[in-house]
Image 1 (cartoon, rainbow, N blue to C red):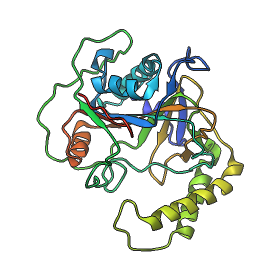
Image 2: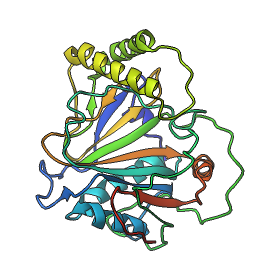
Image 3: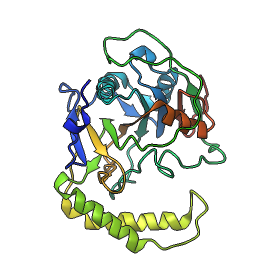
Image 4: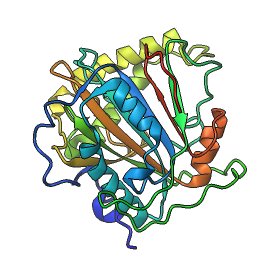
Length: 312
């Protein structure tokens, strides 16, 4: 199958919006809303049928959402399956994040995402010594079933097998896909200004960062610097404008500080948001990542503060 990446994301572009559901309504179903902030994650082979969806997804949706998410989610998963199959990939890290209306992102948080499989990148940070006591985690392994009519892919799902040794990282995945099923879409600096936005971000970080000893993921000095950088970039990049995907569109964007797309969470003062993030990868890479967190592979789990129920 012909690769779609070069066709859809040319070398001159750091992001593109791709339509996956032309019939998507401009407004989501009125009965869909978020009861509490929470996320659900899955790491494993492509979910190629509705029956493959791990039971933990349904538990999560019942705990944190009102209304049905599947009519909005299934078309996006079908698109992702086809896209990644064309790239020769059949595994991913999929995260669905539900967020209630908040003023936290009234000020944009312009940034680029780390290279996920690079040493020290987003996926290879050391796990914390313990999980927050205020959260509930539910995990399960996806079931096997026949293909449904709603999700189709030509990629065969590999059978579960023993985890292979930790992989040698090759930085194979340098892009991500995301969409917003409810609420406003992710903000991107318009393509003509992306290079300027990256240069401004690098300069701002060099100027505002003060060398200091740092031994914690929750370093107060790092947090203070991050807030200073955020405020400065919000002012300096405001004149460059913003671009957002429409309903039924996905954002395909590069990651990494050198070529990554500068983007931000949107303002959420007007309502709830359900956001889906996809990190493609090879089986060995993803299996190695979850092993570092003491988890089996494939794996799904969810965390929702204040939910007092666990299940499998």
